[in-house]
Image (cartoon, rainbow, N blue to C red; front, side):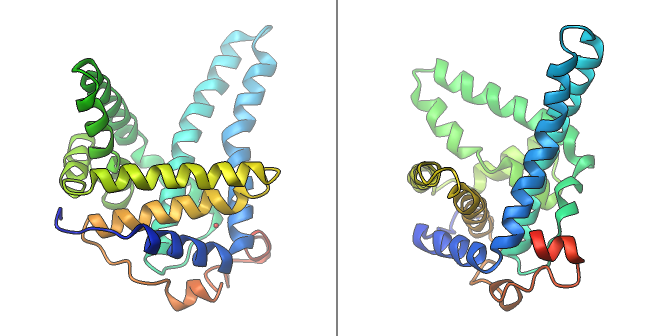
Length: 232
């Protein structure tokens, strides 16, 4: 898998063309994702002073839902990358993977922190080496250690490219934020799709160009009025 390389230009082009053809869906998806992640948190803050136990329960629910939504966004990106249909309820289709994601995230943080304690450089290297673990969990259902190992193999010859790519995405999203934050409705899904594109490339999967059903904005047809109108 390490023999595969990716083109930043191709990844960004894929993200842009897919978002442009399905902008309504992506706007709706981001709104729904925001509400799912933040409503429990707001309820938790509301009960914090008078009902700390209830507040703690909602805070826990917020953390779990946040992780599920992040995995859901990866799942949706994978579906678009593969040219298959996606729908809003895919955001919550990865509950069974929460345990794997939670453990893998802790291991990832510990590995990176250990690397920073070793004169910083190993931490930077390991940060990018294992950065695709979440995609392997969502895409292949791997366990925490297996996902981290697969990420290490996939990024073997591409860590510098990923470093540059992430900075490119950072500046793209800064530009989106500067556009009265409205631009984030484009730059966030573009970033998700582009990053998934490089995952597919580095892991030896099929990416190619945007599939005709996606490029024509038909990924949401047949999903109901809510999906078509909100249309991610």
